[in-house]
Image (tube, rainbow, N blue to C red; front, side, top):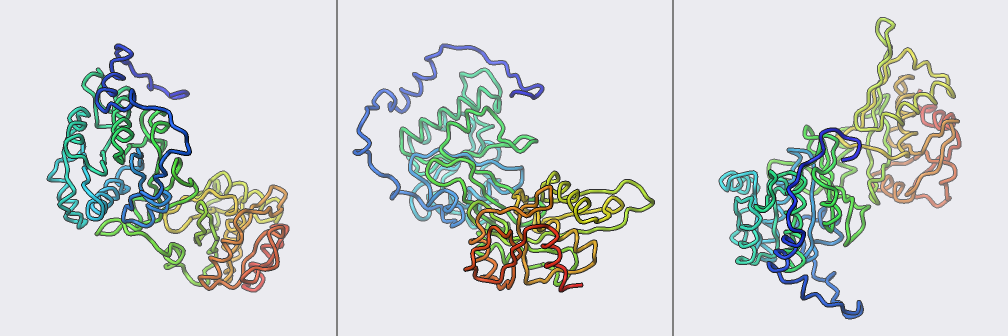
Length: 434
């Protein structure tokens, strides 16, 4: 990979047409393909297979498309295998035979997890194998509706003289499963490992070859999980699925805003609710700030959890320069409750109000929310999706919201305060709570 050390991989050169011939002989679909008018192509959108998890179906655009090849990545222990085992059980129970291929666990370990999740089904068959040739023969014999491969980094092709997980092996094995999916109309889901930087391990061609790429996100120390789509040939990439990790597996969260605010302290200084857009979905999240004097006159600490540190530093600079807050002698801590990772600029005003509230020891009205992008001159800029955010606030009983003046339309479902500057926002948010 460019710009990184120790990423060159030695490969053994072979005949260029050897693997292509094997793939063509194996499924016999490349050579038999014939061009047809698009008007005569059968529409397969109605043939989607439900995964049994509403949140996952939402991210996929309505379910699995027959013949699709998908990739799911995430940190170790985040719940990828748990999610796919639940999917395998649901599809086997409702639609047909499912093959679960594990290259990392024994069948005994897989059964223990299946028993715990209540995922035991007669039409769910499993094999512990890493040789892609053997797996191909099993698929040809069993003819499953869905194949789950856990994980692509453990699979190998005997003809490639590289260890499993290498760039060459991942590329070749992904090509084999691509031929199986497209040639046989079988849906194939691949589990992918991620690097320290959070990107999917292996060659970038892996992400280009598949039909959709999903990232499973969340803090392993919390129960909240987000499934995010970064590529989807069959649907939107703006949808996210939200789950809660329980002892019985992953449970879709039908009302995530209420879930996130369930433990919010009432009338606590430094606590602000921000309607955050996760794709096209509004979520109400609590932003917490704590401002305390720096002990012994040392360098002030700046620490964030779940928010962009660079934007946080910019907001603090605006509060110091434009509003005169003496934060250069204060330690400032900021936290997005619930284990979420928030990146949206609309969070800026919420961070500013939370810091000002904690510094002034003045609580914000618990029925008032805040949103807006803060500029370096202290101006409040417009943000997208305000209508959806206000509807979500109204649904959960909020009465007021501070928004950018340019976003005010006059037909909002609750009382709104349009502000042009950060000073106006702070006066409205804190004046009634001092």
